[in-house]
Length: 412
Ligand SMILES: [Zn+2]
Image 1 (cartoon, rainbow, N blue to C red):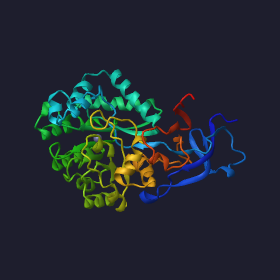
Image 2: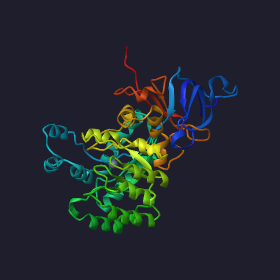
Image 3: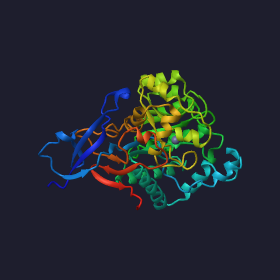
Image 4: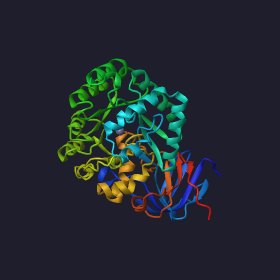
């Protein structure tokens, strides 16, 4: 018997997600089997057609649903501390500004992150990555953005790279020093970006391939964002943007003008801007949990992007303030409900859509010759994880054919 081989048998439904393009990526095989050799998918087909010479450890999943590992294209999971005390402040009706004045908000996370040791940050982030794995995410982006000094932001990138090397998760780092204006540059966003262009951007290459900016009225303007992203691009870096979270500030249009990898949030992006993004190959990364968590309630028009033929990715936006979670699968029923997406569209958005946003196109699908990252669900139909909320339906998670997470059953 070949110990590096695995035969997954008796799969009720196998989501391969191997179709072409956003509208047709979703693909499912009934009564399937999958052979994995040395971490790579070697064969996929009907269980009854399993090659007679297939060798390896046999895993009978008893009719369960199997999907690719989920791809979370937008997280901020490297930070110190938490902001759970803000729950009480919000319940008391305190405004965002009052919470800031009470020592809360993003700047409190910045202070804790600046003061945290490397080991403390790695430990906290590893825990979040473990939770993400247990919820079925095998590939995820982690942005920096809670230090807001050149040297601290480069340290954060180096730490994310260390976590990426540790695995078993696949981590994609993103350089988001332009996340907010730090206290040292209060009221001078342009001066902060000029400082970053001088002392930070030239050192990003090798630590990350993509640069991000929070392009929003009152934070960094469209003009400031355009100049900064062009400077990043001149250094051989790719670009993406946080846009239109609180108002249509023209960020979606800027993303299409610049041909960014993705435009993220898009809560107020217009239909015209979505069409332009789809034409330019910009992925719309939609973060439905964030709008609901802060009780804004304004949802991105994901359907407009799909109607325009573009890729949509759903992200967790895992962060300590507006979306404290590491679970993308927890959002699947809510993405269906709040964004009016079909089960097939939700699955596409948490697999292939995420992979397109990260330009990690081997992820989010199960294909012969590609890595065997997959999830066995406590469900026998793919509708179920887009319907049943609040219970982690992930049974087991595999990365490169290795079992990396198991959710234990209750003792009955
Ligand atoms: Zn974000």
